[in-house]
Length: 462
Image (cartoon, rainbow, N blue to C red; front, side, top):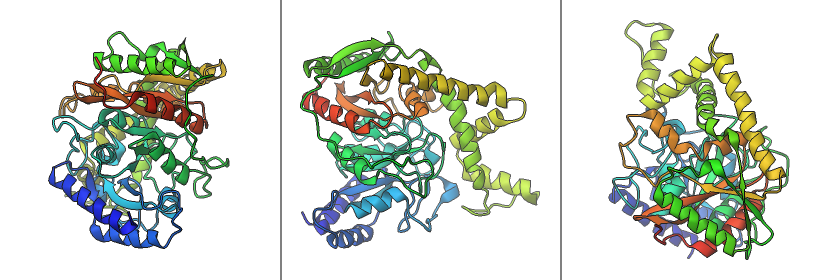
């Protein structure tokens, strides 16, 4: 297909998804797609992503479409500059197809916290697609685009990838530039990738990786290459952390993981039991560190430089802030700002934030010991259950946060990880998670491709 034909086809798919009520996009236009096609047709035909339509989570800035972070406080905002990742993808021949719906400011695990309505699971409208990158995951799962960008702060790509039955890859921290990603938790945030296949995701990740002088947290190392898929897993030792296989694991998830273990053995890998003893502290540690960084990063949204400005009835700067931020931010964002401000406040900093940073190091040390002890990769469930019902956890924030129990430790440690579909339980996708050592993204992806080929994604598991 020509780029122009891909643009027309993608527009038709986006329109069909809108008509079906998926609510996965916040902005797209046929005019933008056609302009992207004309730009791509001027590039060499052998560009690595030539003509590939890619959706962007709406916290990744572009100059030709609004970036709202699914928040009223940024309604209609258009950035004066473009994210480095987007510039690199466009240079490789990709076409920006749409800006995808998300949990407001990437704070949520179900994409029910968008100011513009929840995203519907593409397989079961009564379920959530996961979050916070639920719109991106849903667009890939529904066949609208072959790949999409999300962002990971504590599992926001791997968890919805598992729920929707697609591949979701979080790179090593510092592998991909954060320039142009609206900040949530600066020491955690990673632009990450959804793909219909491991290779789709790997191609996109390779095209946008590498050092960026505009982001001091990117590492000055060679850019990632598109890995050659392994034929088998011979010679690999893959660890099974006992803390990630609790007795009360959902039966469908447990059956999917047994299928993944069996395929891993048949491909020639050696499976070994390992322990990550501080994993129990990952969720409380994450929900101290991330809100603390969010409270600092979101202080800039004050009605002066960004978003609508509301004048309080009493007048004065305090009333301005209260009216603007109270109306502009939704309840989950307000909750996390309050938590973050509390744990950073005088008298509580040492008791909460400093202690959380110490525990974060212990969590990272657990992974380091496992990998230096002779394990090449780790294999775990991605989520404790398949996709839950819409509204099931919105009234209980702690229950919602626990949906991230198997993913947030990896973000705290800065490691690469991916979710791979391994089957379906009563029609709902189940994902397995592969975790690699720091900056071993290519080796992890190569092994995942072999496992993907052996497993398939649609087998029913019991």
